[in-house]
Length: 318
Image 1 (cartoon, rainbow, N blue to C red):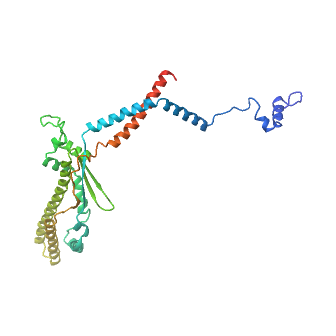
Image 2 (image 1 turned 45 degrees about the horizontal axis):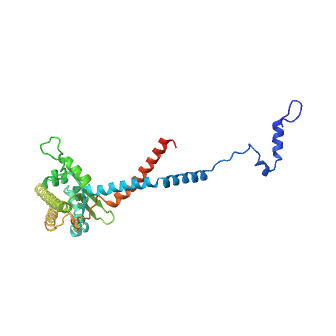
Image 3 (image 1 turned 90 degrees about the vertical axis):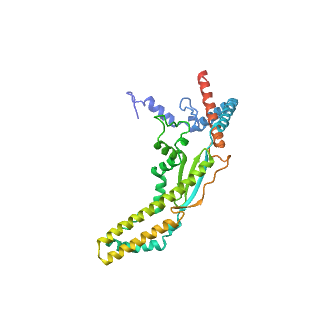
């Protein structure tokens, strides 16, 4: 207890003691002891009411802004050049997945081929190689060149006499980024090649042509590789007199001859077309999508009106 020099309790101590005997109901009503605070829920309710009054008071401005933006959306839908989507659904050729007798025969030869220092190889499947080829710049560039797509892809900017005219590399980048898309379903193995273009007939034609060229390219590559292997094996056969190695080489040559035969007789060499591309109807465009444009217009109109109201109130100082 704090004591004064004369031995009496200090005023602070006496004040504290007197306060201890004040009933709780009377203590809450004492002036100066408590400051009333507005809780966050009450503040939120006040702000929400103010915002609601603001919106209702300026409803006409929101309707005008949204109407203007929706009108611009309809105008844009009429002026934007439509884009159409054509797709080819394909699967890896069934003979590659099955393997069959030829695959079993090749696995049996691996040990024997090692005697001759020849590897049958493993690595990626033909389907994986074909898919990588489809995505390659070399394959895309050859397709653009053969179909003379450079002026088609850059219709507005292309001029052969202009030194700054788009190049083949520019066309490949444009084709990869805006025209062609490749989707692979890892679960089912299905591959979808999508072409998006302004003319529906061209979109379907390019999609089907890409798959046809890919099958042809992979077939030619398989035949060329097999013939090169046969030539190499024939040279190796002349260098050895060991009967076991000679037998292994003959069987490897037989394997390559079978590969050539398969390449010739299998029409869909790399991919079998499950669903070919068909030109979409004129009203079945991918872009512009009027529904998406209208939704965006409504949102932008609302935001524009709200910002405009805030600017007006700030300018007026209210």
